[in-house]
Length: 270
Image (spheres, rainbow, N blue to C red):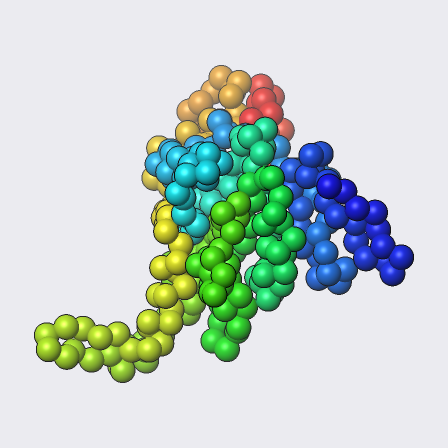
């Protein structure tokens, strides 16, 4: 179903037959089709086999109309959380998977977005990248209602996949623990801690991501430089680059490729 732009300049509805992804635009109060999808493929990912397998299994159940979970991918920066979700869309778009990216600041509009798609014959992943909340923010309340419903059950054709550097999505302060108490031999967390954990608990699938071990990092580098003959020199330079940045992960491997590909004449396009 495709609608034309209204007389008052309202945005046209997305034609999901030809559009695989869209982003919510606050200023126009509507969805905009993604014109240039990130082409990253499932096989481009390195060092996160366990996470790939778990997310693929959950997504395939979702696409088959079987019980499935909302997913939270949390952990260290640059370890492939966002890349995994992008690759997921490229892998399953021909099986009627569609994706809508919603910024954290726009989550208050999430119930309206879901209202527009819950009757459609597609399976939608709402993608929230770098999700976290500070004290006093209220957007998480709209997210909660979509994750588990309120009076109305959450739609069967919508799941939320989010990435975050925070395991519990909210800041954790030492003071929060001061108000916890032990009653009858059981620990009763303070209300602040309960609030922090309750949001993350609504994601039934939680996948953790950590900095790469050196051998895994070098595997990622090799993926970007498939044709370089002098592997020893390549690895020396790659380790030196990662040491200078203070982190080994997939993003570092890609940045190393962008900076050093010209210095290795046999380098491919990764």
